[in-house]
Length: 580
Ligand code: GLC
Image (cartoon, rainbow, N blue to C red; front, top):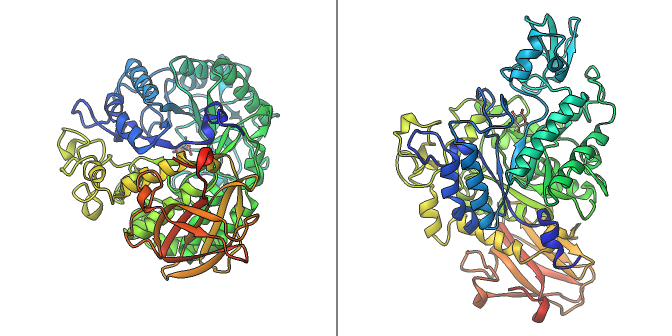
């Protein structure tokens, strides 16, 4: 690769940040976050190092699935602002070097969408075929529902139509029939509309359901005979309209099925895919205090084309899905991090944020983010993660992790001028409440998680190889330790060593193609022996504290880590290849 590739394929490097607009900042005191509020905080995001803002659905909605139930694909939910506010947000973000993508929900509409209303009323209408129908009583499909415990079937009867319609998600979210050419035309028009308003791409919701990929023909065929062809068509159309735009797919499937959805360049389908497999195995590793499960996942992570990217994450706006783990493994994670029934959702996931799961252990929390930022890929944060926010376990279902952003130490968390009881959702109370956790105090405190993550983002910016390199596991003898590197041709690399255990550990990491005596420069370091300050060392901001490691005769570097300690390093170089 060459330097200019980083701007060309901008999504390979950088930091994605997901915002639920109604929960971020309320600019007009009505208790609901809005686009104008988010626009006021663009500089905060720029300071953190965010390069791509991902907006959760902001479209008109009855709000029965936090906006994923859409009634108008061409508008803004009036509670959040107007199309004008959206354009103002996008323009401000662009000015600060931040691109903006939005959720594109194509699998379904709300049952209140005019298309579905019409489809039910008139079987002869073109809209009728926008959805998937069956005339006969469906078989038992309870094993195919996604929201276990809340839904019993993926078919529901429309009294008006006298037929059953398909809905992979809630009953109030009828699935669109994407094999219908008219639906495809609508989808293209929607994509074209938002690109024209300045969006830089989309997070494609529920890709496997949309394309019935990986569902092994378990559901009655909805007529989509060539899902990959169609996804490629969508991508090609988007690129014709905007040469810079991306599709980031939500694909919670095993690697072999995810891999197919990247397409085969030049016939790209998705540019980026969330790495659900590594994420879930990371939690198993944390539960066990052993690197094994994550290492095994990384070993099977398919190599991808240069134009594609994995997106690494540890939490998102949904339940922490654990469905790619075996049943016994999932139980281990539940026992460690969701011991109470109310911590869990749908029998497969956890509705908590990371810091409460780790009981507020600052060193361990930092270890997890260090790991996420050091894995080859592009990291994605969910709002509030940079502060170490907790969840509102009393909130319903997945709303637990969507509580108001905590900006300041007051009763409404600085989120709104409205009284606490008038907010869109209650502010989290207790140890994780705004008194202890808020952006205002965190920004001013050099030892805060916010500033730590900001430094991780800066370390990544100086290390293009983390976005472009391939993943290699480095040999070392300790089961508690994960040693890996992102490498481009072995010469340029960033390596990282993480201790999953609550006990200190000493290990020796083999650096392939290194020579005895080679010097390695430490990039990030918290909790390694020798870093007495216990603060992140960051090459840019703490130049005077730069430390080096030396490769020994057996091509190994000795690394001593405290409990949950970690360290990043790269070849030490001065001159044009050095880091600044
Ligand atoms: C995706 C979203 C989730 C939503 C569902 C239905 O999985 O992440 O929040 O409920 O799609 O749209």
